[in-house]
Length: 288
Image 1: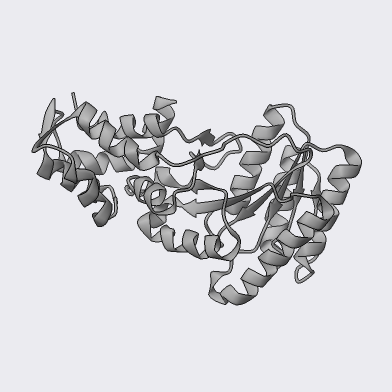
Image 2: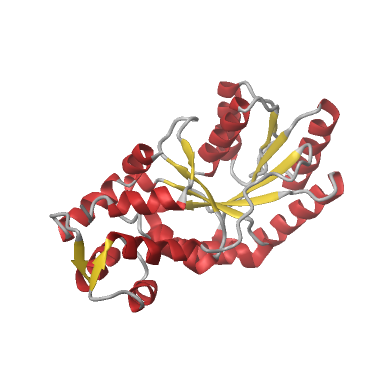
């Protein structure tokens, strides 16, 4: 797990080394501030984290300060409902389609029967891309043509899963924030229809955030949360950015559980987020 986090946070740790080239047993508070800001931790959060720390900071003191950000209620378990319906939310380009493939692969590896719903009917490319992944993973998919009602896809996917005894349903959604009102109404309708097709569905609304956007992705998250309420977060592309500290800002601002981190482009490249491992990977670059 630690090795995987080291891979994901490689560029972030390289940026930290530029600020703190040598590891020490204790570091000045000012240096710790510079490190956090360099890693794209939001300024206001950095100031709050430093408030309770002494002028010379040890590793355990740094760890206790950073881990406090993740003290929110988090329920990572599925609720036992079968089929378990997940709706995947996020802006175009955040890595939604690839993440859906990774989730599907993960469930497959757990021995579960999975079906996909191509609910982003706004873009033909989204339907085609998800269909390619479904074929590659040998997973059934319910898809329609561009421009068709995405709520019909939701209903048909759930109906098929119920009839054929599937364990997990993963439904893609459109992510065009520039037409927010239309998107909001579309997503609300999809959620409403899911509930009619299966009581309590969708059981989890998962938001995909692009790690290369750093702390700016928080505004996206707030917009989607205001629209429909988000249950958890998956962060993609962290391996391609030096903004790994933004995870702290995201957790602090949104108070939502981070479920997974994307670690690459292949279906297996998805790991469970562990706050302890994440923080220790960063501190390994700072302290002896």
